[in-house]
Length: 134
Image (tube, rainbow, N blue to C red):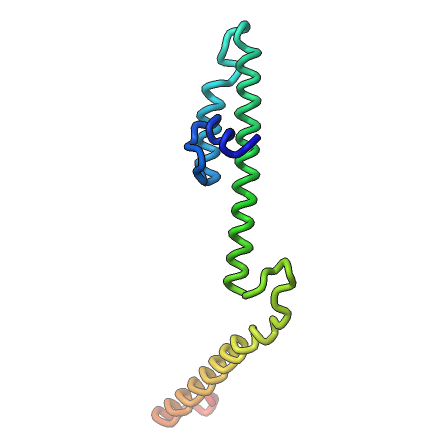
């Protein structure tokens, strides 16, 4: 089934790019209208065939939207990393992580030095008369 036929069956405008939630809502609406259990016995065969067509249209549009989403995700990877992950991507993850590691270690070290210095200043400013305290 073609995409335009599927959109038309589900009541969506042709040549549109509906989101997965729009496709799902349209499918639910059409499935409710044409479900075979809602029709008398003499109209059930026609309703069943229409319901099968609607289900096929839904699955066609769902796979189409999943393919479009994966295509967009690949595009996002190309923009972010320069080379798609499919074709190898970057191999130098350690070089990418190294600056972050140095930043964290430097911050912790500097914070520790500043805290030790502040403790020493306070100790000098307010000496303790207790012989058991450092």
